[in-house]
Image 1 (tube, rainbow, N blue to C red):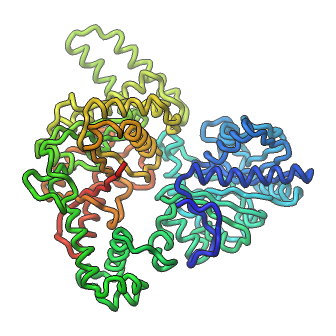
Image 2 (image 1 turned 90 degrees about the vertical axis):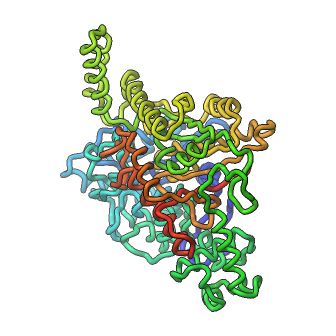
Image 3 (image 1 turned 90 degrees about the horizontal axis):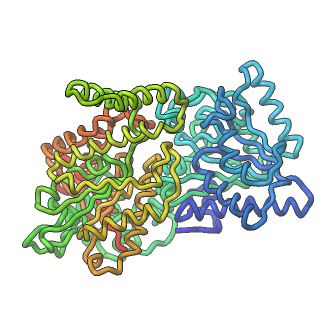
Length: 639
């Protein structure tokens, strides 16, 4: 859905919230509001006082404002801006500095005078910070306050760096950062938590709430829970974003993924009239059964009537009839034959029986997503005789530690010495790599040689997995999509070359099945870009004859799983198959025992995968279906 206006207040929601289909459209809406405000102030001969945020969420807003400046003549000469926060200590030219972020994302590309933007100073000695913070607020007050405050939101609900526990009357100050905040920032610091500052200067909650207009942005499923708490829950210092309930002119702008826990999305029948199609019915019945702790076949008329589902009940007449329909639907999603079962009636099976032997492409955004996300299904497809190809879309080189790279280069040097191979070039690469790594600061880009070594490590692990599962390494395709090869967490935009690489492989293999990562909770965004490339490639060739017999299945990764009502194919695994998958994941040694981009989840990837797969099986069991050790889940994308 893509609401462009907020109409009547939504039941349960205490802050007006707009939901957009994707962050780009949402960002255009917010950028347009900012541009309209700037122009209005210009026409009145006044300054426009903006409060600005950093982080991933506002980047698309700033990109749109830059476009409007270049293509539509939007001027920033009357703008005075104050940023929310800055790490302390940090140098202004450091890669992670918010001074640098704002220049690179906005200020260097528009005509705002340099004396008109203010950002907290990360170089101040601690003894001078108190006076600076008082002066910072005084500057805002002298200009009449903020006309517009742009916000992001942390995974723990922080706004600015006002961490949980911050009071509603808190002032601009030095703040100790929560561990979860620092862990979430490790990607900007080379994956090393010890390099993330422990403190930051932040504008206080009280100053944020004094802004005449406040707009908060949130993208992705990882923000869904904290958004729902802020919008629908009580005002609490444990979720500082909830303080915006007290503001008379606040707005949350979110994408569909960040809105999934809001009641109008999660349980829309409690908020408004809904169309009771099969999908909505399945969603409501599963939700009711899980909430009441009952198997589906034990739900009663009273259960439906007492929980806002009387309209659904009226359409069926009896709970028994609804229960049977939904139960059968769930039952039919379970299959041990992900490539289709030969010589079987496939009327109620998720996949076609024919052709018996299918050509399959598993697209893996990183070199381990195939085994982590669908390793059991991968093994089943191979064991059942299908021609399986794996397409590793990116090199995954930034997720290899420096120590691991040096260990492998050192191995090559020793190998050459042992077998009397001319070693001079290898030794020079080793010495250059050691020097490069030693002198590298923060998240600076690795040298080209080091990046190649890290990519070779990931490629070798992927090939080891393919051999373990049982496919020839000739069926392992390393696409090395160019958008990824920046050497940093920040990637280039998806380009035509990326799409053509994906398209050419599909045309070469002519698959009957494509498996792709639909996991948009990936914290680095690579999965989303890789999925966009697949979607665009498919759209460009869907008219070809072989594509008429191609089905696309979407799996999810180590961060989240499909909702139970969304699942269209569930592939069960026995305890032995779970162990087999774990051993396959272990082939990726560089991703074990403390990965570079650990994030806030301390579990290793094999643990995340097993917990998620067992959780899916447990949900099916709670709903009254057979009890399996674990399950991998898929949703079909119909193009």
